[in-house]
Amino acid sequence: MSATKYIFVTGGVSSSLGKGIISASLATLLQSRGYSVTIQKFDPYINIDPGTLNPYEHGECYVTNDGAETDLDLGHYERFLNRPTSQENNVTTGRIYQSVIDKERRGDYLGKTVQVIPHITDEIKRRMKLLGQTGEFEFIITEIGGTVGDIEALPYIEAVRQFKWEMPDDCMVVHLTLIPFLAAAGELKTKPTQHSVKLLQESGVQPDVLVCRSEYPIGDDIKRKLALFCNVKKESVVESLDAESIYAVPMLMRNEKLDEIVLKRLNLPADGKADLSRWKDFLYKLRYPSTEVKIGLIGKYVELRDAYKSIAEAFIHAGAANDCKVSIDWIHSESILTPEDVKKKLEDLDGILVAPGFGERGFEGKLQAVQFARENNIPFFGICLGMQCAVIEYGRNVLGLKDANSAEINPKTKHPVIDLMESQKNVTEKGGTMRLGAYACDLVENSLAQRIYRRKSISERHRHRFEFNNKYLEKYEAGGMKATGFNPDTGLVEIIEIPDHPWFLGAQFHPEYKSTVTNPHPLFISFIAAAIEFSKKNP
Ligand code: GLN
Image (cartoon, helix red, strand yellow):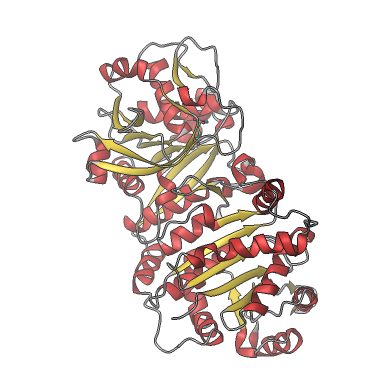
């Protein structure tokens, strides 16, 4: 294949239609035909990255190997494609403007007025091409955040127009839209889509394909109508019905021949079929599990499930690997303060996961959950703050360190068993300054972690400021909590375990970011296996 092909995915009518899933599904179909594909997301907001956003605002902040704090859609890209993304895969308006303003200060535009067109749009185009220029990918799918018509997305749409003008044969636009059903009229309505396509056309962009989200089959008549009024081929109007799982969407898109439409439009052979056998196996296991476990996910953002997206997805992957349906009981850590609450909310669970998080709200409830899991031999998995909670709980209730705490929660505590790293003490800026991205971790021989990973050394992704305080290491190890994973360069503790407990493990890193359909994460697989064991013994 000669040139890299660029596919842009825009959204119309409504937000939350699932551009990320459609992009990932199309990428999966192309990948399963043997093409190398990556997906990037351009977000129209002014934050440099979502790292400083409250999860209530924007869901989970996903982290790449190279330490970018990104939109959660990048998680979908990795989970579907089983290929790591990087800094380059997520760009925001903030980042675009920052580079243009830096160049202006350096004098790169001396004598010129710096403007949205051409300077901002040129910078957008430059970034849109970066991954294509690595020569690694045959297809670059670019998801444009937001909805067509948003003022802030205009420069991106203009960049897409120029792209199409510059390389008409190697570039195309897929527009994802909504066909609402009006119950009173008993009809599916095409007008909102006609209007959103008109908006695109006003900006000079003609979509090549319409992917129509709908609760009901849209039928031939509606396809014809949409094609006529939106100026696209009828075969290029694709229906996207609500799916039972996001992982079923590639199959739905296959049935609608989205991959063939795209290949034909880009003048590539569309005979032959995508090999989706592994994908189908996974879906089969998802659909027909032979057992079920209930896992409590203890966090303080549980009202918004997107805040724990990667964890929820990792459970789906690990469930399929264990032939088991994992149902998650979302438990607000502020709701489990009294012993009665704790018992009521946690006693039916087969496993307890204390989630990552920041700050004091809901902290005591998380400690209660750890204690309940530890004392009742319920499989326990602590991630990041969840691991730190496990250390604090053990300090207070087993080692007799009454004031054990994290310096994040109480900077004056007598026993800062979780403390700020030396290198973090002088950090004042909040954005992008945590310990971020992939770090190596050596595993202790014969530990639970080492038996699970079956490796001596692993690499996992981080996003935190605070660490296990090694001044307390000896006391913990003598008292029954073992550190079983260490950073080989700094000696920082990355994993803790209680060997006397059937399955009790805390990880300072975030294993959930690396779990994919093809490579479910070993820690999650093992945790679910332990939960199945537990449920058999405690029916
Ligand atoms: N707040 C903790 C820290 O910064 C944990 C962060 C997390 O759970 N991601 O160390």
